Length: 66
Image 1 (cartoon, one colour):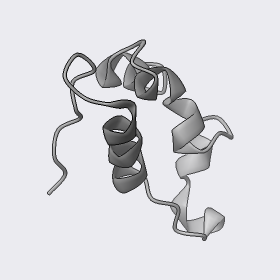
Image 2: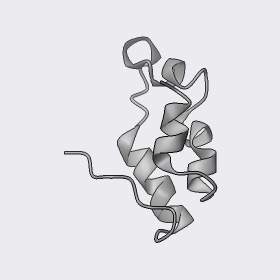
Image 3: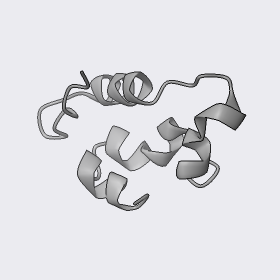
């Protein structure tokens, strides 16, 4: 079960980065995975850089890719 994203007001940058790494792990099989395609050619950590930095919420950034 995927836990909810840490709130930017009460979490650290490292906690948010770890959450993104855990939620979107690289499977090293690009043809079968598709995560980088969902994130327009970016790895998830780069796609969520504003969330990790505490500038935007997880949901706001996720909305960019829907």
